Image 1 (cartoon, one colour):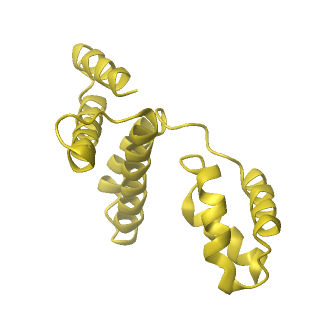
Image 2 (spheres, one colour):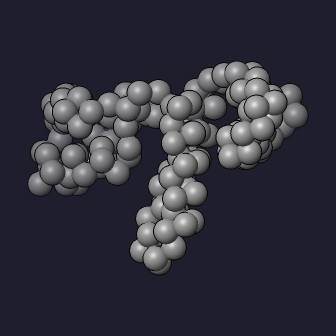
Length: 148
């Protein structure tokens, strides 16, 4: 997947698409940083690692959009929204809330959770199934509503 991103970077540079080029450079830089932290110069990120980095970058953009909007900086929020749209092209299709809700029900049944004190067990069983395909905040809210 990293090779695909590098090829896309070359194409966007040739097409003189400054915004996409910038986002892809930042993304590849974040992937390289991840590789360095994970295993040094010899480590090569797996597709799952790359998706994890893309998800983290997308979450950063979402947080920035929220902060800029709250501060009344719409021009900066719009820039972050455009970058987020580019990043979303490389993420797997997101699960619907109904799909996540079904998985929450299964995880609650599987772990035998009955109260809010069991939220850690449920999230531990659930997150590997939805990793990269559902927002963690949405998952957490659904689990909390099921256990309360």
